[in-house]
Image (cartoon, rainbow, N blue to C red):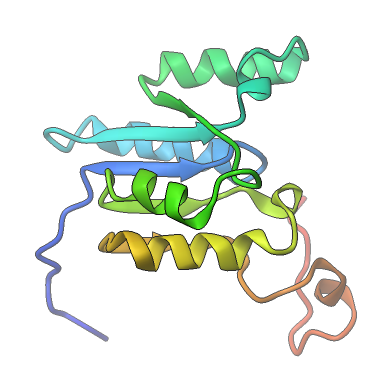
Length: 146
């Protein structure tokens, strides 16, 4: 186990998306930010999600505001690697929570943007696995939590 303490502190974090994974990540970041001076969390969302009239989306947007999380509008699928790298460079940590809706090529695009941006930490979501593998060909069967 690595016992060396990191000298890089995450105080400015960007979360990509708000689905099944994104909202719990945002909630926990907001709880943790209360104990870290200067901590700021932001979330990258499509403009259509921010102004959606779908009640569940409206609830998420309201909760994000209540948590004190900044909304950054954009589209992962439409942004170029250069545009994403420029955005990522404003943060010290980027956490990918976009999921399958972002498209099959998006994980690699995000990884390239993270490398280009020079950010200290990037956490991809489910990189390199396909949902169809979860129940059939995986070495250790993954089970959905209930």
